Length: 346
Image (cartoon, helix red, strand yellow):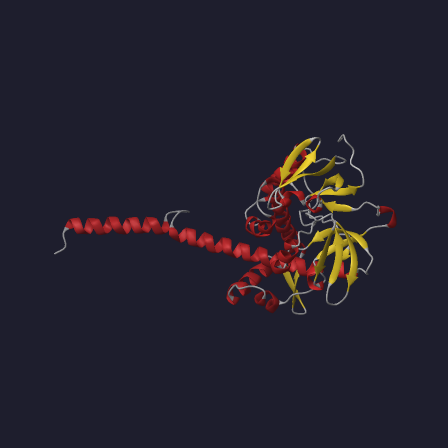
């Protein structure tokens, strides 16, 4: 015969189990339900972004295109697409999915958050640029309208992200990227890098490995089906056309082309003299402030003072002061080599 104490213990344990499972907003059931709801929200927002980018490039996607581009189960994608249609975020035309006005507005809000986060990571943190996109992909689903507005204000309402992509305004206005992909230009073209596409990641990583920067001037010397060769900041670069296609160039007008020979400070050799042209736009945040505080400012004359046994770091004579920096920092300082070195620095 079961004792009353046993009944009481079973009752207490059952009650605790029910509390753990179904406690309002905190129980396991509600957490799983909210998690599924959040996962569905994220999937819908990712699909909206995918549709926006496709339409922006003049392409159309159907349901199979969406399914084949992700690792998500087919049934979940179909359910999400059905929910998007029910909410009038998308419509179907000739088998293809089109964003409605509401869907376009929603997609632009997500893209705005993503690009603001990349700008924040580049300006305010020490995260490496190869990590910006992945972090922003996660954070773009987290901020509401007020938090997004606060982030934009904190950054000074920037117009472009660190890759050169326009940041949509809170009203959904998007600036046009001027220029064309690098392979579209003929040999001899001199231009400036306006935009570097960060997708697909495998191509973006190749561009990062080359240390190519937004705002850098390029001179295309060879362009064919196999490779594109160009000079930039005293270095030669060789890219496959499929990689170069992710780099947007704005051709410079004749009156914009100067005779300056711009190099990276990391290319300066012993006994060569130079003056600082400026600091690359790619150098941001704390590193930029530190270099300026050390005296690496425009028109300052500079030369190598000492070289370490491994050639990194090097010590540069700046305003009669020997300052040691690593090549990883020196590559952001742009110089023009000069024939004579004045005894007194500006």
